[in-house]
Length: 133
Image 1: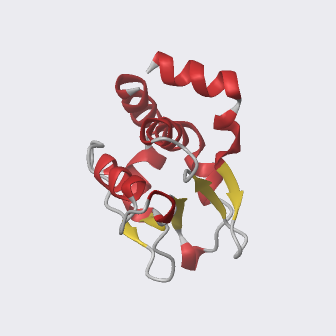
Image 2: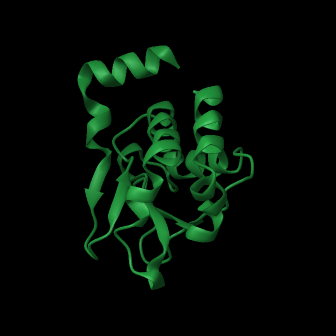
C-alpha cells in the first residue's frame, strides 16, 4: 500500500481522478489507473470525499459514477478494471452493490442507498480505508 501511494504521489497521477461528466455530475475517473491504483483512489474517495461527489447531483440521479473504461485498449471483450472494481466494492463491510451503466458500459453506477452507511458514519469508512490500504 505504501509503495502504491508513493508511486502515485510522486507522479501526481492520483490528482487526476476527478472528472466533470456530460450531465454536470462529478465522476470518479479510474480508467487510466492500474487495478491497485484504482482501488487506492476509490477507497480514498469513499473514505474522505464521498459527500463532495454526491452533492453535485440532483435527487433523481443520486449515485456515484465511476469511469472504468470499456477495456478496448487491451483487446479484452470486457473491461478488466470494471470487473475488478465491481468485485472490490463487494469486499467492503457492508458490501457496496453496483452495476454497469446500461448506456455506457465503461461506467459503474453505485446507487446512493448503497453508500448511506459510508455517508452517515464517516469514521467507519475512514477506518475501513486505513485498514485495507
